[in-house]
Image (cartoon, rainbow, N blue to C red):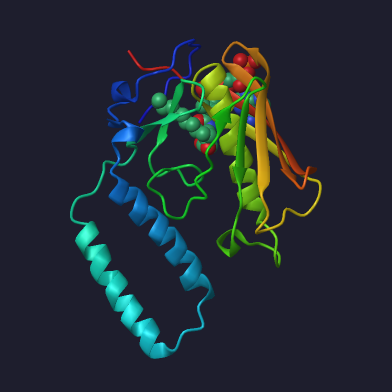
Length: 219
Ligand SMILES: CCCCCCCCCCCC(=O)SCCNC(=O)CCNC(=O)[C@H](O)C(C)(C)COP(=O)(O)OP(=O)(O)OC[C@H]1O[C@@H](n2cnc3c(N)ncnc32)[C@H](O)[C@@H]1OP(=O)(O)O
């Protein structure tokens, strides 16, 4: 897919890129339940000390389920609408690794709009572990990338990250509510300068600055 990055002030419709668009509210409760169950499964698999018989049985069961689910797949790039809590919506890929509704590996960062920009709260388990008991630095960057990309998209128009700079101020703990905020600092044509922060117990653990380049629907 070629993305034209000329200036635009309107949110492009993904269908103009040939991408399907799903209404977030139309996803069945059974799918949300499955995603949540598999999210818990990933954590259980990562940490289990079950005996080999149980492991073999679980592998066969999961393989069987995978085969049943894999018969009808969504198109790569399928987009979904998401309510931002203030009457507006954003559009993102349905399997986005940070915020995707149908991605069991995602922490499903639920960013909401605030007067300053965007805000989310999330608590991470050992699936996101880097150093012992701490969040992996790449995941810190991924969450900040999502937060700044989202605020740039919502407050201007969708774009791609051209540059992302992270300052790791303190260790970011697992099993602790993390507050993630992001905001637009300034805009110059199709360049959007954005920033974000992660806090644990009110203390800043990481800060990010990024340059987003806005995209436009091709003719
Ligand atoms: C709903 C539909 C789907 C909507 C899709 C929504 C997607 C949301 C994605 C979420 C965030 C991500 O993870 S994005 C995934 C990670 N990022 C990427 O894969 C992007 C890969 N990079 C690229 O594709 C390209 O480099 C672009 C598109 C970012 C820029 O290319 P371009 O369009 O040719 O623009 P270019 O002329 O190079 O640059 C434009 C201006 O920005 C400056 N600039 C460019 N890069 C840099 C840089 N690293 N550092 C400083 N400045 C830079 C240039 O000097 C120039 O300034 P001046 O001369 O104008 O002054």
